[in-house]
Amino acid sequence: MSKTVEAYIEEISKDFSSIELSVDNYGMHNAFITKDEIYGVIEKLKEAGFNFLTDLTGSHYPENEGQEFQVVYHLHHFYDNLRIRLKVNLSKDHLEVPSITDLYAGANWMERETFDFYGIQFSNHPNLSRILNVDDMDYHPMRKEFALEDETREDKEDKYFGR
Image (tube, rainbow, N blue to C red; front, top):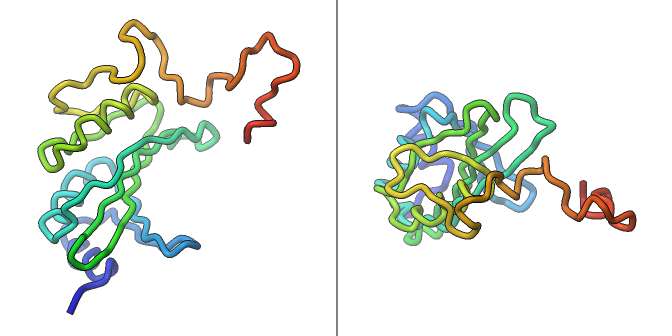
């Protein structure tokens, strides 16, 4: 008989104190984890059968003081057909989480993309460099501190683009 996401999380929660599990309105399981424990949690989930990293990305929430950035991981357990979303909140002053490239080779490019667009550092990454933007770019374009449109235009305002 296959396990549930809750059963897997309950099993590994014995080793980690920071896991907060919830289910969103769409039935997706979300686990909030501290950056100090994220690597260990992902490692245990992989050992438990969550062997596919579907996605890894970042988000920027400038209004959340002290937790302005978030790294989001999507893992899939093929055998039990389970999915889980792991989230780590980061302060703008401490934008670093451990790399998981040694667990999932596909994380290499995803971490590089997240670094490129948000400036989030992945410690122990084998080649953390820009992947989609030019190397001499001195900012990270997906941060909400930058206007969505050319500021010289009067007909374009951020409020029309969801900000």
